[in-house]
Length: 162
Picture 1: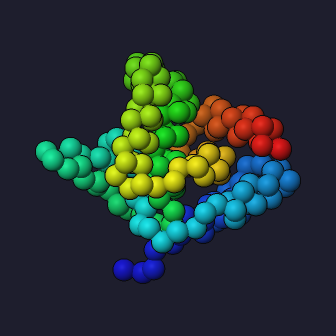
Picture 2: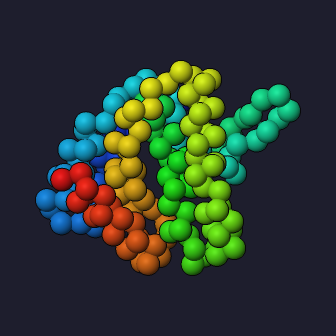
């Protein structure tokens, strides 16, 4: 098996070749990516609920095809963004989205508290991952409406940061 790519390398690649934004935003995003904390942990890359199995007294992750090395905050951000921005998927899965929206704050809160309890990780840099992780989703699957929603949210968050 070859060397695992770091999440920062992957995000840089996505932005260099798939960016759907103007040049100043591209460089702002790239600067944000380069300032993300690096790490040497193995990160799953796709920690969604369908890849987490309850096996009695422990949980197991499957589908490691997107694993990378880096900061554990990469996986934590990916997981929390799934719940925080579930409304992006309302068009495709309206009933599921309505249910998850009711409990998303609870899901996120319990997940973060348990992760912190088990790992003793400092979560203070978690929000630094939001804009780059959302923007990286522009290169993934999804229709134009989905990608426009993501881009609108990224722009909204950038105005808060700037």
